[in-house]
Image (tube, rainbow, N blue to C red; front, side, top):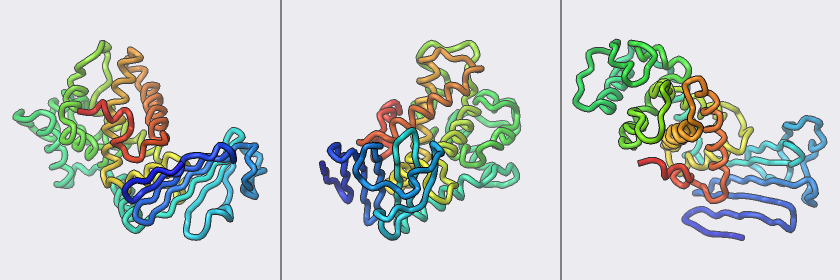
Length: 289
């Protein structure tokens, strides 16, 4: 079945062939995902007999030229991921990967300004006494100097928090103040949780890999072509999903890692839905306000 949209089309499934294929086209860029059931009559990759459950092989001949492809076997199914990026997509991915590699440097004026901007967006009208101050503990940093908490995810985690505060201020403030639902006596620290969420998304998307190794990465790259701020939007969705998971589980601080894992599972499930082509179409996006 073929449904047409603006500059994109999606081919859903051919159950008679045992094949499910999704394709997206945006200004000449193609993202194709094909899943072959073990009983499918479609020719499989020549390396399909690999013994490993996650065996990776080379480019199948049916792909055609100019596509980056990964084929692997997982739990009896043969799955292929193919993507041909436009120059715009490649540039957006390059910029995002650069952002992910920038360490927080407390001596840089622009990084200091970003911290001050986060404070102003979080506590409008409240004066900040210094970049090292007990005031930062109110936001959920571990100590007086928030710069020590960025080591895991770098400067992009600060950018994510600032984006969340400015774009979805109501949701940001609700989570910061732990409003709504039955809260634990020992809650997760808001700011540190945000840094951990950034790191979790970076791991989930696997953007540093030279070739797409997961469906999640391939799907996200198409979303990045739709919106340059797809990573930041996904971060905001992840934060509200994490908080909802926290409340649903009646979790306490010691269960934070488990909640983060279930958050990742929920995000992956939504990103792989057939009708989700943009971050804004994820079901959990509706939690933001």
